[in-house]
Image (tube, rainbow, N blue to C red):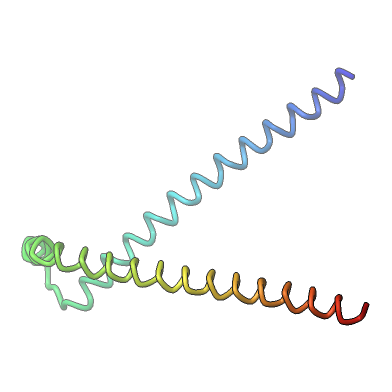
Length: 106
């Protein structure tokens, strides 16, 4: 019996290690994404070393950017709700059809 508990604890420990590894990978990927975004902005805006101007521009555009992001998020949520509702309607229709088919065969 003790052997089973040891195996279970070993598996739990392995899972914890994997979680830590994935968290580290996630952190590295996020850093890479941020660097790519920064590089994209510098390239797109044709910045020649004037980083102070870039910071000022980002500060000026932040409110507008946040509004756009929030609107996009709201739009995505509306689409998701619409799809969920459509799925629910299809499921309900299918169940109703199946019930109707079952009673007709009787």
